Image (tube, rainbow, N blue to C red):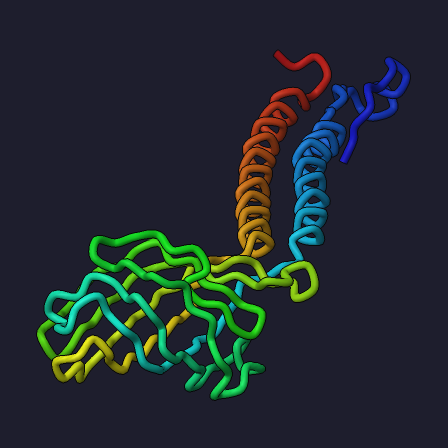
Length: 241
């Protein structure tokens, strides 16, 4: 609500009541614009970023099996796989589900797991590849070997599939060497995706917008109280002390 200053004639017509002009409405409009414009700008930027971030992480799991040749005849002392005699897909899910069980897997040799050794393209199958970054021997004896670690699963045709390289956890187990350097093995890789860039952007925009809105409402209430106090201090009968 806006009040205008009255002339002497108007004062006489209004029984000696003088009113000074309040700028409350104008100040509120300016505060509203200052609060809303940054939010709109961030929203437009977020929409642009989300549009650019169309790729998504790889999800799912894939299991292999087969026979390997180690550098020793005992799993208790083996430190590397020299030959992958056979390696094929046992089962898979989600993004890997198009790979049929029994599909041959190309494995990198040698694979040195003790000590842990980075191995680019440890396996390649069905348009996916796995870059090994760590190996940890969890358990071993002469008849059993279990290794776990981390790596990154990538699509070999990311531009067409829209799939981003995705962190993954994996486990390798081997058993029944029976005094020879050949043993059966099982390998399982499971993706461990992080939140997508577009999701993080939307969360950030929402949080900032909510905080800005609360700040605007709080400052508006404070200003309204101040302007109201000022308003009542200045409206008084003409000639009052």
